[in-house]
Image 1 (cartoon, rainbow, N blue to C red):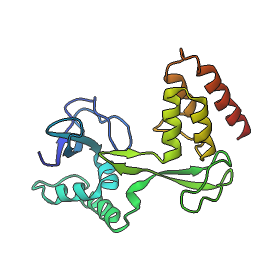
Image 2: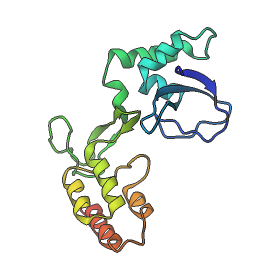
Image 3: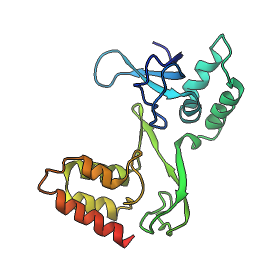
Length: 197
């Protein structure tokens, strides 16, 4: 099955670029990829703007092969071309001021001062946008309620204030089984880290 544009049949799908829902009837972009979990293919759905920005090559290829015009087609094509020319552009996942002085630059490893502007990057692998390693390690440590793994992730530069896939670190921790015996210790460590920031 080829990449395609089609109206969303329901409002159940979430955009793989921004994580927000795609409204029923809204025109969306579907990127077809081999299914890593079985035979056949899977389709990843994107808002049109998100697809132009985050997945420029397949989006532009599909857009140029489309026979009927699309609203905002020139603007979307221009955004996609920018992502192809400037290879790192699709990895940008937002910008903001550092809430603490704990994070490190991924390029030079220098500390990022509290209040300094920083740009969040993501990596696209196997059909999904991945977080930088320290943030992903923190999320996984929350799943395991491993105090030692949480401490390692924080020491590696994970920011206890920055959202992880749209949720605060505290939300991830609480969402991952509050019944665990290690939950109180995990929460105490995160709370201490937040106070130090």
